[in-house]
Structure formats: C-alpha cells, structure tokens
Image (cartoon, rainbow, N blue to C red; front, side):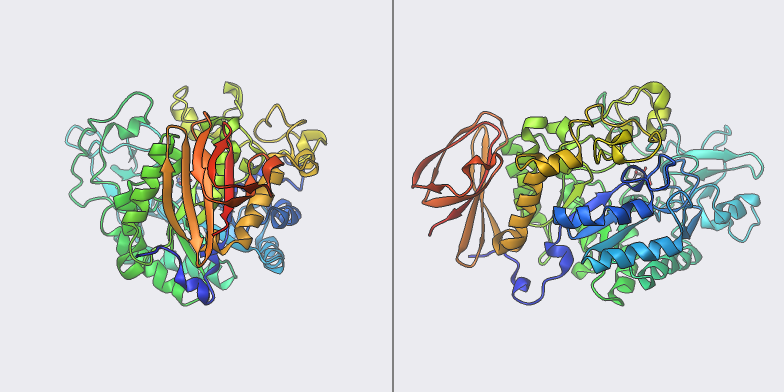
Length: 537
Ligand code: NOJ
C-alpha cells in the first residue's frame, strides 16, 4: 500500500515541514512608539507571546522603505527598513531575538513590481533613452491613443498608465503606483537576486514571494479573452481570463534561480503566493522539486465550507502533489475576509482543528487565534486602495487588518495613541489578556492544539486517509507507524453519529471531553464539535 507519510522524519526533518507559520501584518501587530502604527520593536516585544502560542516561524508582510500606497507592497528600497517600522539595526535585533527563542523569520519579497517612487522607475520613466527604460514594461499607445490592449489591473481599471512626458504606457498588474518590473531583462534579474542575497546574508530564514504568478506578460501583448464564468461579486479584473498576464511558463525559470540561490544557504524556505487552481499551483514545486518549497495553498479560503467540498479538495490536492512535494494549508491572511466572518464564530475552532491536523505546513494569520471577526470600517476611515478604487463591492481589506487587541488598556494595548485602523468594537471583552486567563478561550484552545500537533508524529508527518464524509461530518485518519489518530470534524454544524473503534479523546473543541475513553460503537458528535481521537489498536 502506498503511504503519504513523511519518511524523512526518521532523519532530521526540515523545520518548514513540521513548523507552524504565523503571519504578522506589522502595521497592526504592536506599536511601540505611539504613532498608531505597529513596528519592529513592537514585534520584538510580543515574541514571547508567539513562543507561548507554540508557532515556529513568523512571516512579516513587507517592512521595506515604501510610500505605503499599498502598505509596503510598493517598495522604494529593497535593502532598507521603512522608518515607520524601524531601521536595519532594529531589524538585526529582531532576527537575533527571534532566533534566540527558536523562532524563524520569513520576509515578504515583493518582486513583481516596485513603487513608482523607486529610483529605478524614476530613472526608467525619465526618457525613452534611459539606461533603465527596459527595467519596466513600456508600450506605445494603441492607434487611437488608448492603452496598448485590454489588460486589467487587479485593483480596478486598466493595467496601463500613460506617461505623457515620454508618450508611452507602463504596465502594472496592481496599482499605477506599482509598476511591474520587466523580468525578461537580465539586469533586473541580477538586481533582484542581489536583494535576496542581502537578506539571506543577514540571517533571514526565507521569503514569502509576493504575487509571483504575475511575473511575466506574453510578448504578443494580445488581448485577454472574456471570462464566461464571471459573476457579480467577483473582482472586476476577473471579467477577463488571463492567459497573457498570469502564470506564464517563464516564471518557473525565475523561481528555479531563486531556489538555487537559497540552496547555497542552510535550511532556508521559499513560499510562493500564487492564487491558482490546484493543477496549476502544483507546477510551482518546480521541475524535480527545484521550485518553491511551499507554493501557498489558499483553497481552504475559497472552497465552500461543507464536508463534501473540503474532503474533495484534500483528495484533489493530495492526488496532484508531485512526488516528494510537501503540502501546506492556509486559512486566512491580510487579503481575504477573516475566518470567523467566513465560516461563523461557531466553526472557528473546528476550522482551526482542520488546519492543524491536515497533512502539511499550516499558516495562521494574526488574530485568528483569538477568533477575531472582520471589523467594519466607516467610509471616512477607509485606507485600502482596493476599496478606494472599487468602493462598496466588499473587496476592501481594511476589515481584516484591524489592530491586535492585546489588553483592556487604552487602544487595546496596541498603541499609546489612536490606531491607524479602528479596533474590533468588542476589544474590551475579546483580547489576548482575557483569553490567556480563560482555559476555555479560543486562544487557549489554539495553544493546546498546536502543542498536540508538536507532540504527535502522526500529525507532523503521518499519512492522511479519508475515513467518512456525511452531510455534516468529515473524518480522516492520520497515522505514523503504529500510532493512529482519527480526526472528526462537524463542519456542517448539524452534529451526527459515526462508528468508531475503541479510542480515547485527545482533544476536543470544547475541552470538556478531553481524556474521555470511547468504547467501540457509534460516537455522537455535537454540532460544530471537532475531536481528535487516539485509536487503541
Ligand atoms: C499580494 C499581497 O498579499 C497584497 O496585499 C498586495 O496588495 C498585492 N500582492 C500586491 O503586491
């Protein structure tokens, strides 16, 4: 019988296979200097919280110098820290403090585009003769003077902006303030590989690689065709299919070059951000696994929350993984609605149990461990350019970026002054301090669940086998050697009964049943309950 257990575990497993990754959105994590925006000293001050939570690696969204039009995803200097967050000396302190506690640090590498204020782009746009003209994607206007083709920006409108002074359009997959680099130009490749080296030499443990599927555009510059499956509610950019602007084959050469570079260092990880169907996503492991260690798998965010749909997703993903490719799962991030608002408060713990017991590396988003919901942001406080460009479509990302509520102190202990985005109105009742003291809180549940995961080889490295799917329940086995665990999740919220062998409850979404022995027979699972059983076999 074939098994998908990780045999490498017998030796020394790579940390990124068994570790839990925690995403920090630094603006909203912890402010240390009272300007209402989180910063690096703030992250340092909260490292012990992360140790207690039990995570292994921190991924920081961009902290490089930036005008912050897209909150750091518009970089003006890849080798300096934005003063809002701190400086290089402070960054080195963060690396040292994280490593001292056994935590890894992953940076966000924004390689598809720079800021329009980056000196490279200023030089490029200065004239058609500029030595850096070809570092970005420039095109002549269409015969009618309009954009060269119908390509759309992810954030609304055309993805071309006219530069009157030089009479050409430049391409931007995102905002006009985020011109795309031209990765067909070897000088760009060299400069950007230098950026990776700079941070690897400084001791970072890896990169989350931003929007990597956007790296190349087809040289034909042909129009993208209409998307027959587009429906109201989807971002307007998806009215077109994107064969000429997304997921071009050339991207794999760049990823392979990044991987070779990373292989020159010890145990560094490359994680790719590519929102793609599974059959396309798995190509990002690269030929002979020479691509990303972990192409982010976002499908739990978009798959309908039913046992049948999730079971089918896991099956499809497991079936399509390349031999030796390590799986990973993501339940939330700074771009997508919060878990609690997507699946409902009653499902938050069951969802966490799914994330932390599936086969592969889990990534958590800050605040999900408290069960934070999306926080409504009044129109006059909107900050996200996506919402500003396309108001009222429900695409804005401010609601998922509300500052962390730490305590009952003013501004939830996040900052000495008013935070840059509104806090969850419920912060006085839902914050880290209160949840830390309550053994039945969502935070305490996450801590126990992560601790269980760390202590169980079957969860870290064991095989996955689907056991049952009913209208409401999903059950699967994780096994490593003789150790067999059965995970039963009531994802449908109806509860149900399931035949089980003799077992003991290791973990339950309501701690009441933990430790309980189970006799063979039909086990009753309460609505929204999640259970991890150890089989007695
Ligand atoms: C993906 C990032 O996660 C998102 O926040 C950003 O706006 C775009 N890439 C553009 O860099």
